[in-house]
Image (cartoon, rainbow, N blue to C red; front, top):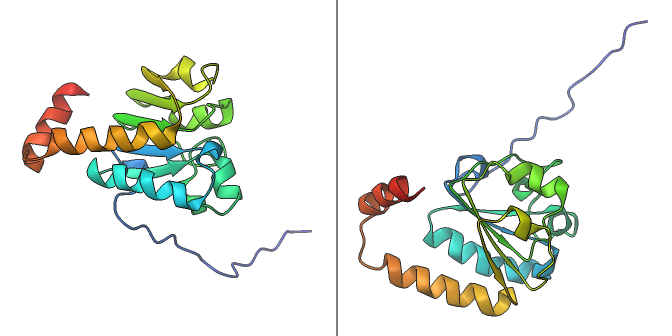
Amino acid sequence: SAIRTEVLEKVTEEVEGIKLEDAAAIVSGGRGIGGADGFKQLEELAKILNGAVGASRPPCDNDWVPDGWQVGLTGKIVTPDLYIAVALSGSSQHMSGCSGSKNIVAINKDPEANIFKEARFGVVGDWKKVLPAFTEKVKELLAGYSQVFLACLSAIIF
């Protein structure tokens, strides 16, 4: 006998800002962020970089962030020029979604975290101290530069 299917509802994802798959820069957080409030700091850096925010599975499963932010085997595959991994362990499931990134920068307090094997640059430290300092430095570096200049610079660097 034939199997019958019926579409009950079509759900479209509302995306605010740059889509994760289209972003040249992604700031992504893991379980180590600790909760929804921590992701606000990631959003701030992503906005400065004209990028998007991503997450590993635990923050999505815990409803800290929308499911549409998930990067990895059960999430989205992304290939940005810059992928900043904050408090992410670097599980194989997550890395399968971002290993095509041109530059991975890792911030993690565990020097043995797998993410450092994949990262081009790594900072061992508490993200709550490292990220604000990093964000301020990026703001300083970008102050006064036009978006056109930054786009050209980005194309040259990455």
